[in-house]
Length: 458
Image (tube, rainbow, N blue to C red; front, side):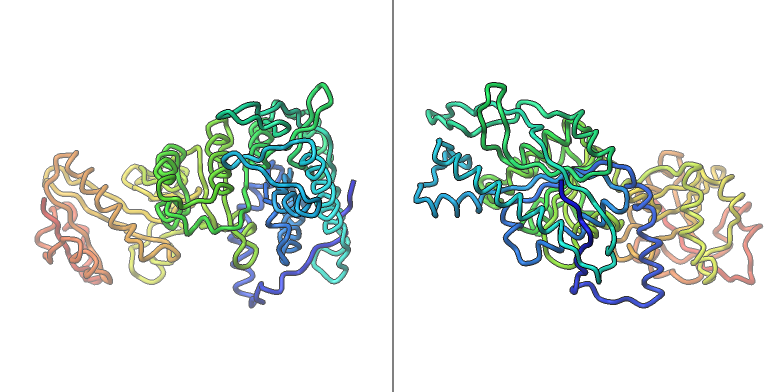
């Protein structure tokens, strides 16, 4: 068992002023609350352990633990095995992307895993008294919790002591997590007859995450998932629903875009989602603390594959969205761009609102007020969160409003605005006058506000 007495400060993280600091804390607070007590499985390859900035990743992992996240770490060991084989003069043999592990190779595997594991524990044990984590104590524990079986013969090749995960002692791992220990697992498994098998760390991480019913499975990899074609297809949300991610991955092999290691991580991510892990994250190593940015910011950093289709969704508003809508429109009301609405009025009108929600936060809204006798509807309260302007989310909601209006038998929309007539004109509206409003709406028109009337006929 290993004790962590402190973590390394990250020199790449710039100092922030008081306002930015408070804003960052407030934006992270929902995620700190959300992740507390949750179980995350974090897998990282042996290549990561060779980097000079490995201590930064371990520091971020320690911070997660201090924030109440229950952690299982699964490390890889491929380059360390290669180095050990070279030192011993043993040839490395692969069939496809899977190592063939004979007895001599297994001796090298044991040596490489033992050495790397000791190195990880030593780094976690380092006391850095001048860091923000000074004085904290985080325990790390390992055990023989993975039972394995041989891969056997594939395409005529006997893989010998290369194995597949048969089962995981989930109960024991849960006990260790409940005792607030970080569980460190190596990519090795044992058979009931005493044999030792060489495993792929992604397979081990997948099996542990699904067995535990982990809240998140996280792969830290050398490449940058945001630059993959499937990552670019995820848009700025960096999120792919499981069904879409599977289709995109099927199109990749002919392009040779992903390395064998990356593809194995994506395969494990998809399988874990199918087996009950709600969200799987793939993140690179570039920039300041990508692990923390992925977990504690709304937009994240890497690529997330979700078993859910509604990480960012456009839908009808519900009463639970009132607070989010109010927070979104209040700055525009203070600026005079929107007519002020009380919370009570929002609650009464909530069935008129549509929203775009990202990870539980309302980032855009509008309302449609029908005037059936006149065959028209008012498009009102159009608002987009300042962090998401430029994506034309308002246009997404406008298309929805047009569809709703047609469904109600209406043949035109109108909007009243004092500050954004150009946006409506760019999206097909034309200038009108107060006389063009339905009689009921015209009676409530405020000449002092002198709002411009824009009309959209269809």
